[in-house]
Length: 290
Image (cartoon, rainbow, N blue to C red; front, side, top):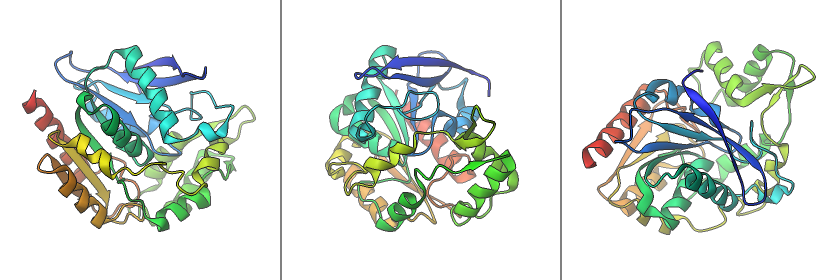
């Protein structure tokens, strides 16, 4: 996909990390900081960037251990607080004083940590299928496949493998949809095999009880109060419950909107019509707020 430049920054522990920088329409609107899920990377936001780039600047990082970012020496550094420290360095390098955080799953956990630590920088937020309470059913499913290290001979084989594992999550996906997702999740290795594009060791801290966030995130929601905040939930999600989403709206208040994306599980890909309309509405509110 065209329209972005590759950028790099350094973590506190010496890792060279990568981000995509999609240009926007001048400096009169905040950038979108797009944070991916556990096994995802900057490419996960290609559908969103394909629609918004040119109007909005999008900064899409690869978290440590993913895609073009370096792998950590210590796998126990693959935790939300370390990702937050990494991103603080990026924000400082880019001098981003105000931004909209778009967080999918793990990315949403990081967004909540940002709201807890420096809420003054947030112009708004999209929390995509994630909240302070995470359902054990969804966690068990993710633990069952993360770090499995499967490889494939062709992109079609990779797409079909994705469809077998995620048929309940995206029941309306076509082969083209699965191919698109495969090319965002996998890479071609030096041996000509198609492999998942992350360090398999990211699974190690995730399998430790409490390793998802490490802290109680409910108090962090205070950081979103008064800021346009979109809570998206996949109708079929097994990780993020309707009850949690509704409680989040109560905690944040009138600046929060809750939208369910039909016939999608964990997580919406942000190109669904309901999701795109909700995001456009949120961005409109942010522009109106100045």
